[in-house]
Length: 177
Image (cartoon, rainbow, N blue to C red; front, side, top):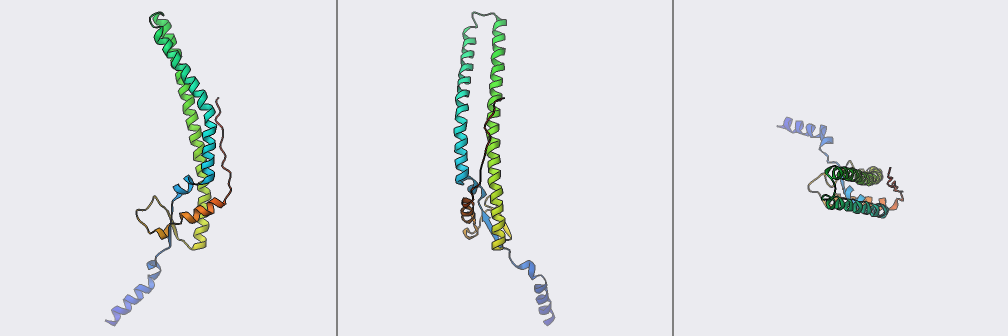
């Protein structure tokens, strides 16, 4: 019987390093990015920048609508060949307009992605620093677990450090080619 106790005792001592729990922390990265004041200001600047283009796009859209109405009204007057030419011309202009809108949307979508990546890099630096200073073995994003204690959430700590940083978020203006 003593032999069994000795074996169990040795077994526990040998494998005890694997038994100890690791320090885990949780952070809400999405919240850190979305609620960052510099990010919010930059997004507002982008929206203001987009306004000048949106006005031009609205004018172009109205011109296309007028052109379509003219085609509809002239169907009785013009020959089929002339109507087909006008329709082809309209379709080409509409296609160019659609491509321009797609480029515009894609451009600003990519700019926002770049800005979010910049903030994410800063957050990762802060998380590395936090992990080293607080001996944290594992940091999970709040979207990768189901339930955890609120005491594990370090989002507020990281947010306060992130707010202290004064990084520059730049974006490129849309260029019509």
